[in-house]
Image (cartoon, rainbow, N blue to C red; front, top):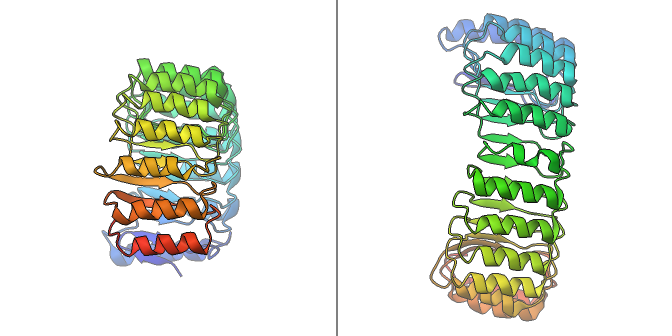
Amino acid sequence: MPQLYSRAVRFNSSSVDSDFQPVVHIMYATDKVTESKAIQRIYLEDNKIGEDGTLYIAEWIKSNKVLTAISLGNNQIGSRGAKYLSDALQDNMVICHIFLEDNGIGDEGAQFLAEALRNKTTLVSLQLANNQIGAKGAQYLSNILQNNVRLTKLDLRDNNIGDQGALCIANALQDNMTLTTMNLSFNGISAATADQLYTLTILTLHNNHIGSKGAEYLAQVLQHHPTVTFLELQNNQIENKGVHYLAYALETNQVLTSLRLVGNHIGDQGAQYLAHALETNRTLTELALQMNQVGDQGVKHFANMLENNMNLKYLELSNNNISDWKAIAAIIGTRAKQEFKCISLCSNKIGDRGAQLLASLVKNSTTIVELNLQSNHIGDEGAYHLADALKFNNVT
């Protein structure tokens, strides 16, 4: 049975199959009973609705003039289901949120949606992740950006739009001043188009083919078109050379607050570049460097930087090559009077000796909110010291 929340209806996972007609009758009954409180939002993700079930939903949508949000993620609706929904949404003047991830709609389905949504001035967010959309589909969807004046979030991760598709979207963004958040992760995008998405505020590009050359282009964006506040570049083969470009841009950039460089083969040299940039940068508050090759020397660079930088609040160094607990202690010691919300050091080589020293600092710290030491070869002795310290710490 559906769960009703005011003007929303949500069905639990696997509670609905393609024979959706009985559920549609429930919706009609709900509308009739509640009169002016007709359903405005419907969430049906992770079921087995399929193309035929989508047809039933589409017929109901045609009779509902107040529907503002629909979520059909992971339901195998295919391109035909996308066509049914597109036809149903033609006369809906209030739709704001559409979530259709994991449905295999392909380029054809993207075309149907683009035709229906291109003039929808109410649409705020569109979620189409993992839908087998290629460059052609991205071209169709770019038409939405050219006309829509309210769309702020577009999620196309886990598709295959490539550089050609990314360029179509980038060109559409030239005249679009409202889209601020875009996720293009896992799309085969290379350095060739990395710098064309400079109008966004939140840009997620992890698991593409950006490389050090793409990092150079993005650094130029950070210098000359400073609008991006969140930049996610995980697993992009950026390496120390690419970090050098980004670090140089950070010296003058006063907008970016979060930089995520997880899994990019960055070593101590790259850590030094970043530490030097953060000596003067007072805007960045989060730096993520998990799963890189930062060692003890790199940590020392960060420790020295933190003597002067009191703005960085999150430093994530998990899964690196850190074993110098004195350098780690130095990082914590620099923040004796300034709040440091999180330092993540899991999967390094801290050991019992390091845990003992860290415990003595944690015991007296009034600033560290979260300290992650998972998988660090810490045994009974180290655990004893940490536990004892936590008895006296009212922050961690």
